[in-house]
Image (cartoon, rainbow, N blue to C red; front, top):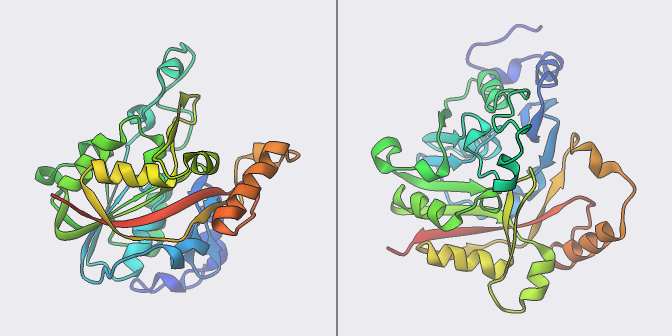
Length: 288
């Protein structure tokens, strides 16, 4: 390994960094150092210019549901004064559907998988980052324990929550006066078409992928309104694209449903990437 300056993680040997990254499974695709990238399930790097980030220089920021830390490390790179990243310490806190928990063979801790924050901590070590990780559910956010933040970012999480209103109510409590929520979440293309000007949702609540409320665009906007937020800026639609290690089932022969989804994604996002998930970002502030 090349000589490393304690103050300069960019001088790390990229091949050695890549070797260490490849020892783990990743959700996010993150450029860790030049020439070394996490091989994630999903890739959002192309969408960063579309997301309406406010100026976070010197600000205190919170990334909720951080997983590998894609947004947390992006906020740090943008000059945030302090970044706190929260996520579940293990999978027991997931909003598992009742039928999943009723299966006696199901392990809600997913104990045979790598620790939830393993990727985050490896990136943190390699980058010598100051981002702080805390094991918390979004429902547990409380200014008495975490303080308040100039920006709270919630990415691709509401779709996996049984009670998104309760979650956003907790988020609102930790937004500092004058601060913002940046919500980035999934929009279900077929529900968006069927909504025709109405806030519409498809309720799932089945299966181990723990998807709950599949929203239309207006559905997400109504959730934000009910939870006490005003939308200042909404991004263009974009796709959460498959990453290099997207689950292998995606690489079967494409079905008719796949082509329909691709056509709908093109309609809204002008992006026809197979396996992409339609998203939109909303920069909001509390109404009360």
